[in-house]
Image (cartoon, rainbow, N blue to C red; front, side, top):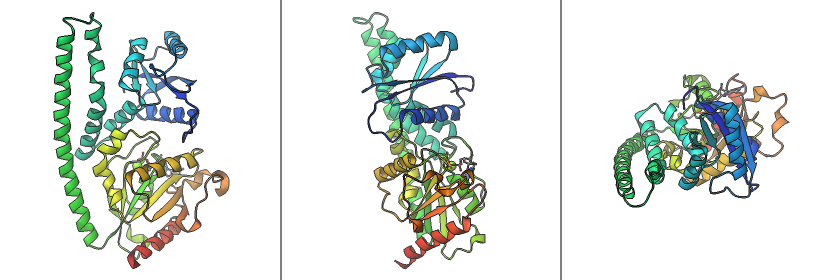
Length: 368
Ligand SMILES: Nc1nc2c(ncn2[C@@H]2O[C@H](COP(=O)(O)OP(=O)(O)OP(=O)(O)O)[C@@H](O)[C@H]2O)c(=O)[nH]1
Ligand SMILES: [Mg+2]
């Protein structure tokens, strides 16, 4: 997405039990659009029991077409992953406006932020896997030439050729990622042999994981008010100034989000294994976020899906500098005092207390 791209964001409220209410979810979609530098010009939501064959209802689609006459947007972004046919149907109605779904937007953001070769490979894999079932739609112009005898042949052949090329590319990328993965595994084995305890910083995107890593390890990783700033894992030794008894390595890695595309989780396995091999999980949360408890639940759900939910965990409630009092935002969640630290990574408040609580956990690991 380019910085001049004008975007209408849209979503449906299905009234089913969801981690987010529709409004917060659409606001987050807005954050995703801003993170790829798109300019939001309008927002439209609809209450529907289920998405239609066009994702939105007829009336809403007409509303969008009418709105476009004055607002002139280039792109409509939908807040769910569209099925290939929903995507095609909606595109046909809205032509020439481009239609993209939440998954494609997240993939775009990942592509923008991937720096290392490993990161790029993983994003490319996820992109191809997303594209494969959707490739037919891209040849729909041939169908519109009239369809039937004569047009079907070349179109189908081209689709098959495209699919074969994508499948080949997927195979090559998977082999390359597997090499990186083996290399990482060996590296971690050596590290564990040399007696390090390892801790992974995990949590919702934008919670302050990288900021905390920077403070604790005296580093300078990019930390910014955009979603998915970090894609590639970074591992550093805890700074000496903390006088920590145990040798500890901290890893920062990719953040979580509601409705995280499954293609991305699968593609980022090599990166996420950094978490699976660590002894401790440091779950970072933004205490000032009004969606705190939903985001906590979402992150826990993803951890569980990945199978990393039974590790010793320290909960970090970050950004306390933004609150007037500590109880302000905690009504819905109960945290155990022993494994919870209230800090500000940015203002470096209560870092010592955090270190004490982390020592408590690492001592137990050492002694077990
Ligand atoms: N006020 C305040 N802002 C903070 C604090 N910690 C981090 N931030 C800000 O929150 C934003 C996100 O911080 P990051 O460290 O990039 O967050 P992250 O969890 O690494 O995010 P991703 O890499 O995108 O998953 C940045 O603008 C930080 O400056 C804090 O303690 N207080
Ligand atoms: Mg980060």
